Length: 106
Image (cartoon, rainbow, N blue to C red; front, side, top):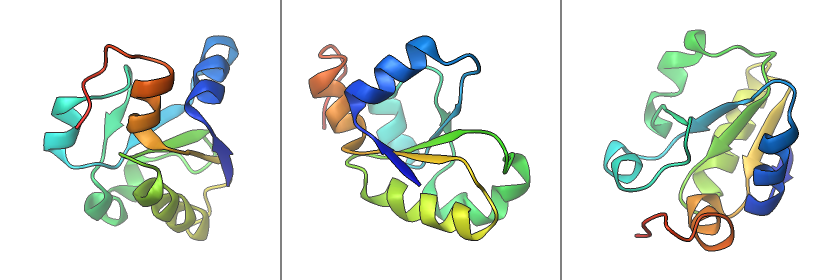
């Protein structure tokens, strides 16, 4: 699993030929409060039951509040055969401070 900082991910999204899946594993109330544009919400507890909705070959950026839950989900996805996982280190908290200062924080 690769780790991208918020700034690295922002730069990458601006040049990527094919946009990765932005998989937000936070709770719905967190997602409602603040999210990265284009992210898809699949709460952490729902990931095992919704694996069939995800493409194991697609580049997937896993996102949470600070990067801990997303790292756990990333490891789980790798154990299930997903081969192209990126963890957003620092999560949306880092995105709000380093990329989009207009994003609400919590």
